Amino acid sequence: MAIQATIVLIACLLQLALALPQSPFLNTRASSGCGKKSFLPGVTQYRFGLKSSGKDRSYSYHVPSSYDPNKVYPVVLGFHGSSSIGAFFELDTKMSEARYSGDKIMVYPNGVGGSWAGPTYHKDSSVQEDVQFVADVIADAKQKFCVDEQRVYGVGMSNGGGFIGTLACDAVGSTLFRAVAAASGAFYTDVNGPANGCAPSKVVPMLEIHGAADKTVKYEGGQGDGGPEPAISDWLEWWAQRNACSSKTEEMLDDGKVHHYSWTCGGVTGLLQHYKVDDLGHCWADTELNISQLTVPQGPSVIKASEIVMKFFDTVAA
Image (cartoon, rainbow, N blue to C red; front, side, top):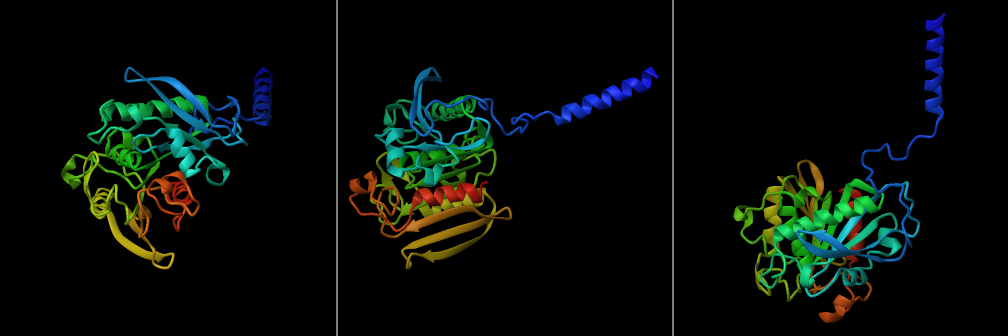
């Protein structure tokens, strides 16, 4: 009788346990920041004093106005160009607006001295230090917010776009992201092709957007402000080799003004993609006027880079 009573008691306890509300954080993709409320969601805020490689570093961040601390969110890191800060990249790309990141957390790291390691004009940190800083920013964000640890993305413009290439080539940096995207990328650290020492630890889905009319980071390559730069077509072919891509397609968009190239790599369609925009200068492509267009100067483009980038993250690299 004692044994039967014990069995009945155990059965009752199991039923009770199954009936209790389950923890929303049983999913192993959820970071340690889950359950922590965010102060002023929907408003860009700043994180100063983040120690990395002995330096005080900083970043800004924006969580959706509808942020739920019990729900996991993808995170997108945005890397500014030279002589700039993350806040300007945010303003130029409009990526914090709900139409682009209503279901994502945006993070905007700041380079030391206004730029990222790689070009000769950058003197204030090494590539290794900047890669470590990115790892530290991601770790810090995971502690502060409810992050989907399998959906961390990176996008950059100009020097920041080139740094995206540096991260993708790095043994550590390549492990930090599910996918990356660059616009008008200045790829100073990847100029010699497969023999350059580019050694990613895994295949990283990649998107690049570039203007054929870019006079700062020329599509055909050559000498840039911070050293030699590869032709964009060569750089893409090197990544096609690294990602074991088997085929390439091209489609003409916007009355032939935009050339969209897509590679199938390891059986995955669109793992590597590129948009060549004929009349785009060195700026963030947008059908709406933005700051970088005014500096070229030029008017709005025929495509929205922010929309294309987010769609790439949501589909190819979901």
